[in-house]
Image 1: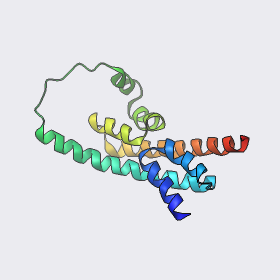
Image 2: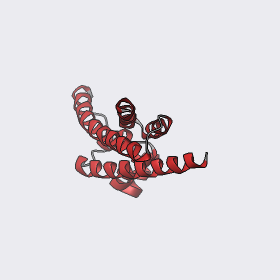
Image 3: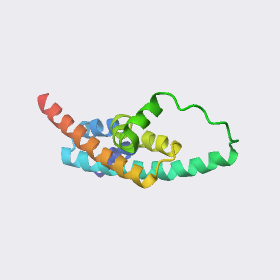
Image 4: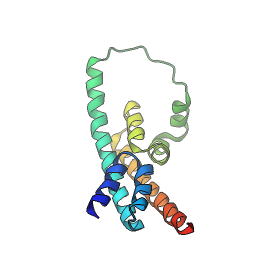
Length: 140
């Protein structure tokens, strides 16, 4: 039982979309799945913040300065429209917290605000997908 819970938490560190179905496949309670995926997701946020800052420092040491490019493209449009809330909350809901943190580090977003919105996104994402999985399993 403990190994199954730790597996769900470890999967949630990288991708919650894999953790929650794995929890249901293991036959765990929805509350346990929610708690394990929430803990794993939050650990993933903090690991991504720590590694993101470290990787940024290492890359900056070896990178030559380039002339600034025009800020066009889909990511910049989303950033201009929704800001840190869109990147932290909506980005976590769609592509995951590590990717959102990586983009935030690239945009030089204040990490305290980014972590807050990503953690909120992880909480909502875990609650939403665990609830959907629970009621979906009841339909079967």
